Image (cartoon, rainbow, N blue to C red; front, side, top):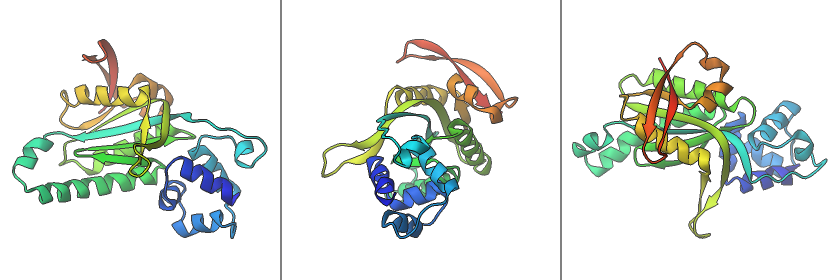
Length: 237
């Protein structure tokens, strides 16, 4: 089992601390699993299998299942008016301010079992996979929005199949996600952020998977120029 956990973790480009945070244990616990010094209990086994979107049978070695793509909810965000703020700060101050915001956001995402992928200037990208991935992504987004009333954080969610792995030259590669679900999330986020100061938005795919969102959303139709289509965006509040 230790080899299986390590193989899955490395395939997804995760560090031991990433896996630990995602299933609610210490990095030391993950290290012991991978050395076969200890084993996760059945509830944790379910969490690990769910995180990597494989069946329990596959995880336990009853049959092999190797999926490069899996269903997930993509979580991407941007900071409105980031460029204006950057004009009044030094380069180091911009980085320090961004790091404070990203630190709090990442803690909340990890609490709900999300996997942080990367930070890009004023943006944060992560994903949620496994059981109730859309529900957990929505709860994380709502918590971030609620505890940051003074920050213009715009979050957008989209669900679909994604690929997660290392991208780039082998010596410099970093983990990343790709696929139509990711592209669509970024394109709609770009347009959505022009119409709101802050808040949480989602596609219909996420809304249909999210019981928690029932009764707290209103819909708007947005024209997405790059996609050359009109889509319905659901907004919290």
